[in-house]
Image 1 (cartoon, each protein chain N blue to C red):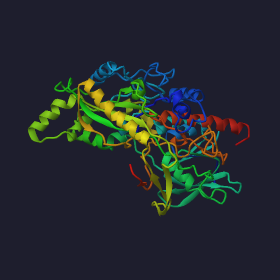
Image 2 (spheres, rainbow over the protein chains, first blue to last red):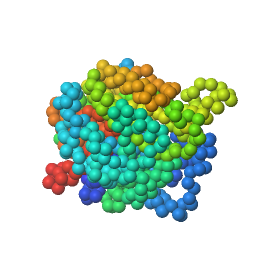
Image 3 (cartoon, each protein chain N blue to C red):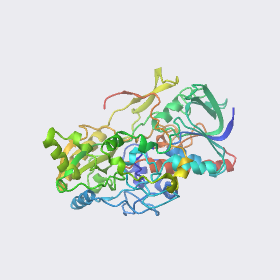
Image 4 (cartoon, rainbow over the protein chains, first blue to last red):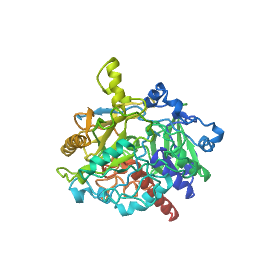
Length: 98
Length: 443
């Protein structure tokens, strides 16, 4: 079994800060994340109900369409990971009155 | 990922609910102790906004220029001003100028759909590249934590997880385990981590883990501003809300209950008229009505502080497991009398505000308290007394010294403010503590 100084479970707001700070402090950090990498431009290609409606309304065609080479942040974004949204892995059962 | 990016600091009073309002518990730390970490995080992630000199909403020293106000938001501010209620620029982790090698917002749509250009802060865009650059970072995706493993002394020794693709169980060893799975899943993971030394779940001999689930309940109104109805629609779609009304009830002098609520002002006059589905009618007249009202649509959504009580809890289902064989969480929740009193007040106040605003309400959100924000907190709470809390003020388990929980579940009490900035500040503070303790050889 491989062992690390710190295991951070979850890459959300709390986990991201924790991993960055500890790595910069010299600790060997393993992060476990239930979700997985999303492709580049995942959000404008596949988005929630609002975007689907925007697509229907052709609003989407008005979004900036600059070729990737002239968008310097793309190369940076490409090296980072984008996560799928991971909600409850099984869904929670609700009991009780509202 | 799907985050509206509102980043508000808790106020000094938000950490002292017991002392000031006589309910719940005081946090084991003060605003002054968190303040340097708020500042640190705000500088790291880039927050637009300004110092509004409000005691109830402390400000940092380093803001990017606020988002420009729309016509509807100026009309709201003018109306609220006549009631003595301030409307301020919202503080969001959205870039309005280039910052940290990221581009500013180009105002393409609703923030919660995700941001492809990283103008909104997110962990994968802004934190993980920095962690990776150190050479000290390893990431395992598709890894579903099942249980935190312990040694014979009851200390954490690693994590057992299931690979989502292979469905196989694997283990990773660690000297320190930090749980950041969010309020429900963090409690679930600890409750699922049973061992002879921790028969009720890890660090849970006092039975507090999973209890005190709370956060925000809220209401809201969909309105159209009479003043803007019939004007020519213009594209102002980007970056969702640009203004915020802090702690409305306190600033309006209402005190019939403990706690507070604020108003998030969500722009709704999108070029695609989503609100049409909430209007009644059919055919040509209906279309004409939608076109006429569309420039004036506005949504006023309230976030009300819910009371932390021990009965509201996350437990494990003794019989049901998820697709990976892990027992699922069960949520027990009941609103308190205080919650209901606050909810009635926000509903009434919104009606008053809309009257002043010359706004016509066409949908009320709900008839009683409900939750629509994923702002749950409190299930692994910090506290001074190890008998009634799970963590100390550094998010460290009272019982298991090398176990930390730094997501929203560590909150002692909620406030009306969105929790994410405080989660990040507390996580940075815990990280600082871990680094110090490691240097001292304590961890």
